[in-house]
Picture 1 (cartoon, rainbow, N blue to C red):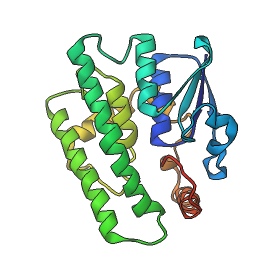
Picture 2 (cartoon, helix red, strand yellow):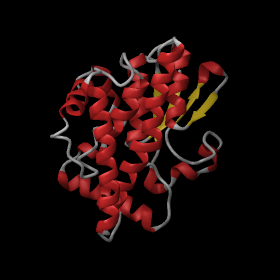
Picture 3 (tube, rainbow, N blue to C red):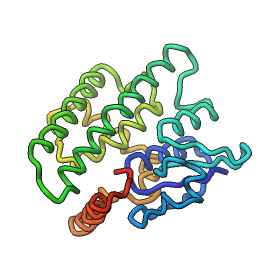
Picture 4 (cartoon, rainbow, N blue to C red):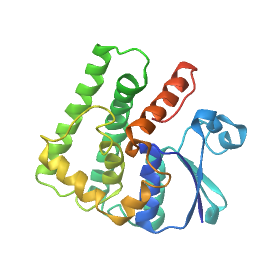
Length: 231
């Protein structure tokens, strides 16, 4: 059994989707980020960085893993699934996983901050991060023009990137003119394990307009008080 400590964010959903795809039994513990639960001593003992997600694998002497990309790698290697066994295939998956960790996630995260959460609309910052997100989306669209998935078969690289790209409207970046990316987004969304994974816990980006604004106000309050969170 695995304990998953998470919240309704793209990084959190990366792990819940993977757990659902792998059919691994787990218990979800939803952290109240606006109450700064992730900074409490008991959680810092699991993740010294005080961020979600994190897991504790009870079957492996309560082994703790933090950082969403590291968790995906741990789960893939633990099960021998969602990751090719051959050297080059594994490298391809890691390349596209790092593409998300170093590009898609940080750029969309900053787009969210300035487009959704920051109290002042600083247009140059919005343009900067939406523009870079858009450029990265074009990289994905080009890759997907001739590949069904990012690294051959469906893998943790697809899960990691999809969990962020699916929230493109929240970042204010449309994908209607990126047909290959849109095809990929829709195809992965149709997977039953993915549909279940984004309910663990339910995504804030799929809320009604009023509830979404309430969520954004809460995130804005956290920014103003200097609290650290995963967006």
